[in-house]
Length: 381
Ligand code: GDP
Ligand code: MN
Image 1: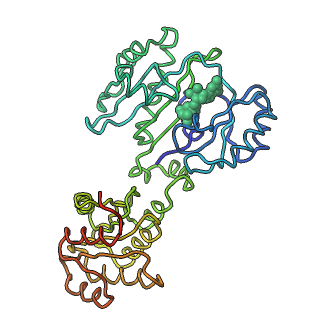
Image 2: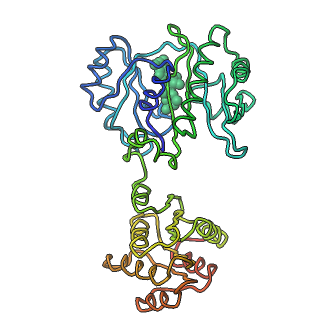
Image 3: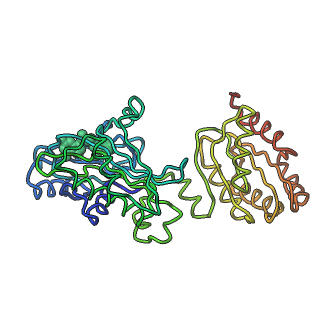
């Protein structure tokens, strides 16, 4: 789960990471009031969960409260990457001497937390990472030992940080490490961490990703979830305990088991198709879960055919067949063709139910994939 900049900054503040003074607003007249209270130039920042707001016009400086209100009025009607702007953060504008980058993330390849710093922070950090990877310092953190002072000093040296900022830098790095651990974050990022004219080091932006699987032990963080910012189908799927990830292809997949779902997508690709999603209904799913999953697939305009691949173990194929027929019955006319492959527990009973509905059955996964691709009418890759 990602949280908004203003939410991340509230957490930063608790850990004494310096941030600019400011407040979040839901409408332009409140923006004006905040700007008046701050009493100087302000920056108006769109609160959307996408990167690159700066380049998309979502970060703007205002000289006075009038201008802040005008900017906010404009922004509230805007979208960034398809996400509407409902909230803006209004902060005192900071005089920036230099923009740095600092984060703690999870290095999955090496199975360790890693602290990353660069003297090329700001909106072009991705370019720096590609063109000059040596400009980005990465130090793995041993979770048993924690973040050590010598590691922080090593980072300060590699980003050429002037000596007078080292103490603050160490305090900020340690705070990030505390947040990373305490909140079960997979990423805590400050970009840019600026050297400001007036106040030394400051976090001008904040980004945090919290491990969804740990949310059960952080009810206060789970409340920060902003459902407007998430794929509605993924939110719907979560409600039913279905694991669903939206992708770019046209063949909807409904599978039981994560491994089988991956294999199904692989076969589709091998045969020249593109999966529209990953979808795992899990073991022992009943009819209701199957029909919810199908409803999610049918509601995706990208989906041109649906491939259902079920390996019955604890899951009973006749239950699955009932789920499929229920979902179809809800629709007056089947919007997209289905191909179904059932094997394992009660496959025969399941097949009989589906045959009554005249639904296409496939006997192997390869056959199912090929059928789904041809029924989708999308040209093979
Ligand atoms: P992002 O583009 O979504 O990462 O948004 P950021 O919050 O990182 O802002 C993008 C850029 O806007 C920063 O790198 C700064 O250059 C600039 N910026 C943000 N806040 C201020 C500010 O208070 N003063 C000035 N001068 N520039 C700012
Ligand atoms: Mn940023």
